Length: 267
Image: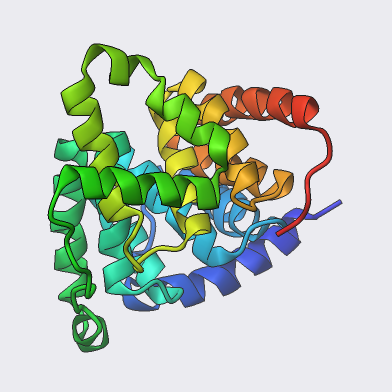
C-alpha cells in the first residue's frame, strides 16, 4: 500500500516538472490543508496511476477544464500540456474537437486562454503554426470522407448508428452539417490522432453528464484501440477535476459495456 510519504515525494517531483513555468506561491494558512490534500492526492496519486501516460492524462484534464469553464483551470492545464510535450497545434485541436461536444462558448473561451498561454514563451510561440489541411469543397465530400474515417476507426456499425440517428431523422440538414464538419474535416486533420480524439470525447461526455452518448462512445473507444484500463483511467483523471461522482457514473457505464463486449486487446 502506498504511504503518504511516498505520495508527497512523488507529488513534489511531478510538480517540480509541471510547474517549472508557474511557481506556486506559498500557501496561506487558510489554504494549507487544501493544498496538502490536493498535492498528495492529485500530483502524487491520480496523475501517476498506471494505465495512462501523462500526455493522454493532460488531454483528459484540459477537456475537463474546458467543460468547467474556469479561467485559471484552463490556463494551468494548457500550460501543463505544453510542458509535457503537447504542441500548440494539438492544444488548439483539442478545443476544435470539443466544439462539437462542449459547445462553442466553452471552446472559444478555452482557445482564447490557450493562445495567451502559448504567447508566454518563445519556444511555444515558435511551434504555433497552423495545420496544413486542404478544406473540402462540399458537404457531400465531407460526409463521404467522414464515412471512410468512421469505418476505419470504429467500424461499419458506427456509420449505421449515426446515419440512422434521431438527429439525422428529425433535423437532417443540421445533422449532416455537423457530421460532415466533425468527421470529414476535423477528424481528417493531423493535429490529433485517434486515441487523443477519443480521450477528449470520453472526458467531455462524462463531464457533461451525457451518459447515453458516453456508453456508445466507450464502445467506439474500444473499437479504436483503447483498452479497458485506459478508458477507466480517462474517467478517473477527468473525474478528479469535474467531481468524483461523475467518474463513478462513467465507470458504471464502462463496466456494463466491458461485460457485454468480453475481453479486449491492449493497444
